[in-house]
Amino acid sequence: QVQLVESGGELVQPGGSLRLSCAASGSGFSINKIVWYRQAPGKQRELVAVITSGGSTNYADDVKGRFTISRDSANNTVYLQMNSLKPGDTALYSCYADVSQFRVRRGYWGQGTQVTVSS
Image 1 (cartoon, rainbow, N blue to C red):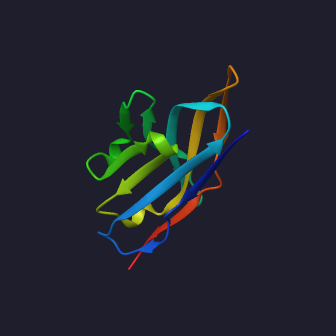
Image 2: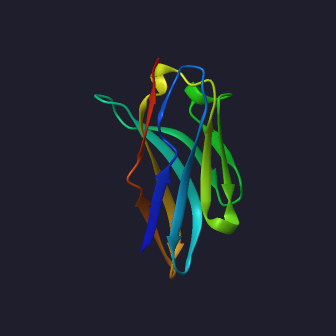
Image 3: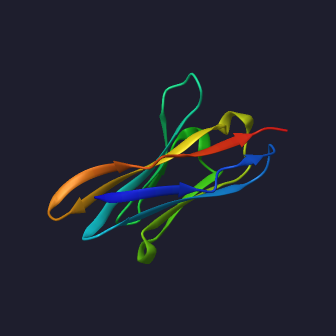
């Protein structure tokens, strides 16, 4: 079993910045990729950013140039730096980890962290 804990979400004014964290814990696992998703009320969940074990990254068009995904491999933590935030970025942000553990590949979700962008 792998646990994911997100943190860093809060109320921020438009134009502000936040850094979200996704910390993975457990035993005997390696991370293949971590994906940040977000879901706003009444909307479908959407992919925000991806980072692979090789360090490759990908972003949704809406956040390119504003968000940066990065990782601290030693601590099994992935960050999402969010700049120039807009009210449309308001959502519950969750991370999903694609991991290999004891030769089995599984996916795990965190509980999410709320980001609210409002004046």
